[in-house]
Amino acid sequence: MSCREVEGVECGPNLKSTTMAAALRLLASSTRAARPMITFNSRAYATATDKLKLSLVVPHQALISGTEVAQVNIPAATGDMGILSKHEPIIEELRPGVVEVKTLDGQSKKWFISGGFATMHPHNELTVNVVEAAPLEDFSVEAVKANLAEANRVANGSGPEKDKVEARIEAGVLEALQFALKA
Image (cartoon, rainbow, N blue to C red; front, side):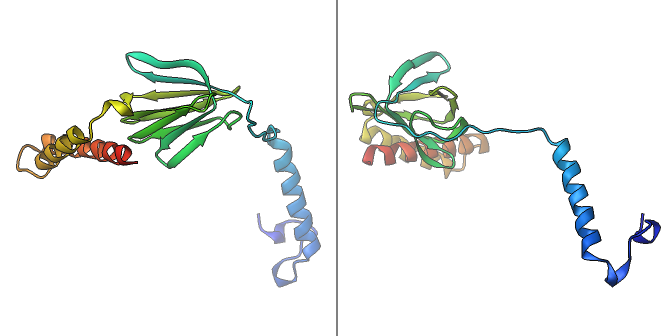
């Protein structure tokens, strides 16, 4: 429908701003009425006494199950993150790296993971689901270095493409592990 077909609406460069404003108000009021009302909780920040309930899970077992901790640092695909209690609910993809668990008594436990997902649930519950995880202190710098050299040799070799792709993935995980061991 053109403005010529609407009674009382002027066309062209002489279109009155009041007519345009009235049309926009009508449009805005009709869209507001159609939208459901969404409310957000206000943001609260963690205090020293707040606790986070952590579960660290691999496919075959729970390494940590519902344990109260002070903080968890994760290697998110978007960058390293520190999770405290009262964190907004999120789901984060994890890259190979270190999950650091800070206990309530100030101790720190580090796990190397090969990747997975972290889910922050409401009510201070964090679930970290990973493909593989092992305590960082279980790794030998020399063994990682040797395995990385072998993975790079296969990745750059003339073998089947499938073997080369697997070796590149293995090398990426081993590089992350080597970096974690140096830190």
